[in-house]
Length: 447
Image (cartoon, rainbow, N blue to C red; front, side, top):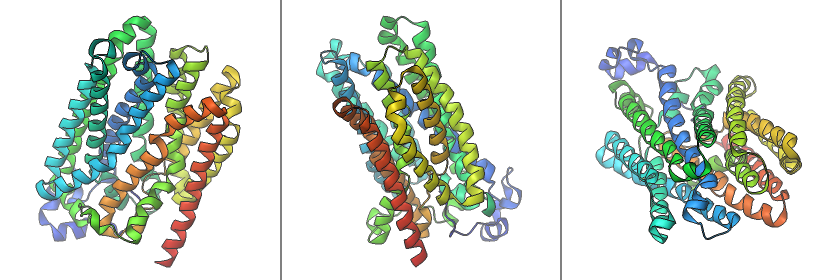
């Protein structure tokens, strides 16, 4: 997470404090390479987002029929989106539980536990029976697995994004902040492409019977490999010393009092427009078009796969732009662009294939530009020793308030009021981001 007020940890300082730091084979004189940290962040984020979108796509294409077969398609999808939101509700709880576990047993125990919980929940989803076989118990089991997923994701916070920003060169912090976010389009692209292949190659009956389960098994394997890689990285001597020297250690939540507690929500609202857009260009339009338009599902999935590529290139652009004009300025300009997009979004999404294609193209470009700089834009407002916990909770709250209920609320209101509700959601997110950035600048100027 970006923190311009945090001092960079120089190789000489680290070596002087910890003589053994210079012995790591990958780091000259004990220096922590931003490139090495970035690899760990991207690997962790890509696996997390693959799992994120595997579940989100299944919430549209599979779960309404499998777990709510007695409801109309719209009502079944809304019920499915309620379970989707459950994972975001559980994330901050998992973060706090993980912090307590780390304080008592160490970072290795915490990450290993989150690995086991994530793998178990994801693998269990792949073998769940439907309501036709298990009745209401099937829904209960799905909700349980989704809740455990959220807890595990929250507990898996490792501090690498914050460490990356501290060790990034002063004139390239926007670029390195963006690198950690690249996991989002990578995970999305893999998930949509895999589902597109399955939908294309299998009959609807076979896809609903067993085809949808393969992405969950793949997510299980990817998460295990990625979390073991992260565990090996953060448990290395150099990284452990760097995390400790940078004060990236867990503190009790009661220490986030007064203005420091308020900074959690400032950080969350600063990223709100970007995080809301994640679901408003992926899960929501997929559900809207799947329920009401005659477009083929595989066509929509391939369209989103292409959108993920556009988002990746837009993220690269955001890194270059942020280093020229500043991260907060880039984030604010992106929020204004999202608001402008929100005003035309209903006409595009309701404007036939051509308009829908343009909706996805513009939406994914804006997603890349905004999300590339959304991580930790307000982290410098936290006291250094509170940054580890504060950055984690800010991200959790941004996901909960911005993305967690976006598909549910937008689909429900759009069904009742029309696609103008989509405009309202985007505009409100953009307004929250701009207000938080303004307040954050005033708070920062007063410190």
